[in-house]
Length: 310
Ligand code: CTP
Image (tube, rainbow, N blue to C red; front, side, top):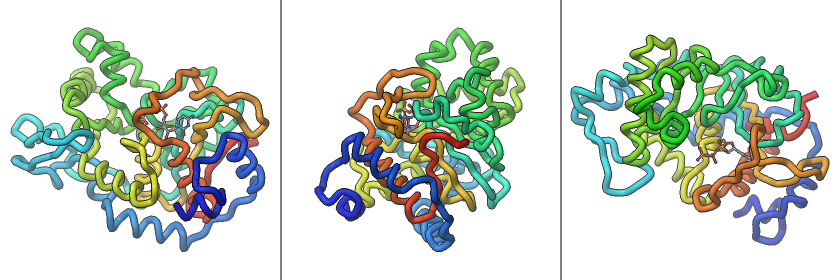
């Protein structure tokens, strides 16, 4: 709330035009503030322990452990002989990561020319199995180290993996040998398709590693941002990944986060870089999330890239 009062003296979400003006006022100048970086790493470590907790591991979830779904109440999964073996032993990343790119799917990436810069990072995170075909390369890059996959996409695009396992595995090749980060224990109906995705990749000997998002981590990160004034029903995937990056990486740059309908040139911007299908407004509070990210940008904690990278 204080942030809003600071940027916009009246307590309300700014209009698209006000947000454009605010970003333009700030301009391209940005400098890293190590105190801010250290502070957020400390805060996120205290609330959410990303290093140890971001994925379900054999280490943090032994047989018998109860995993409470973070997206609904009263549902839980007890780790069994069947699920335990499919968890990784421990956090598999080589930490600390130096330079990370977190790529949201916003239409602001279109014609941004950010691909090269995105690809220069040591670790690149992307959201929701985004298209990376040739036509997008200049704007979004080609490399991926971690990509999130919501079970709803598996359900919608791959018939829940009841028929089309091979085409799923084929399409995943766009993400190289990355980690596939699946929130399998967020909503009950998502568990089955998530486990099927794991088995499909394993059966076809894919070189990708499935990491199941730890529902305790997601819940704690959600609470962290709620305490900072983000009021959506659920955080967007992008903010989960930025939070993860702030906990794991020394330098974070975020691309494709712009949930507004006009760009810095005041021309219309599509919702995604690949289509203009709007989100269901019931779930997320993306403009509120953006304000938090913008605050982190202004304080030198992470860098937001809105507009051209040239
Ligand atoms: N995003 C953004 N501005 C946009 C579109 C997306 O800031 N115009 C960010 C959001 O953080 C979002 C992420 O990019 O989570 C990935 O976008 P998308 O795949 O559209 O996410 P959603 O479908 O809304 O789903 P969810 O966040 O629930 O995974």
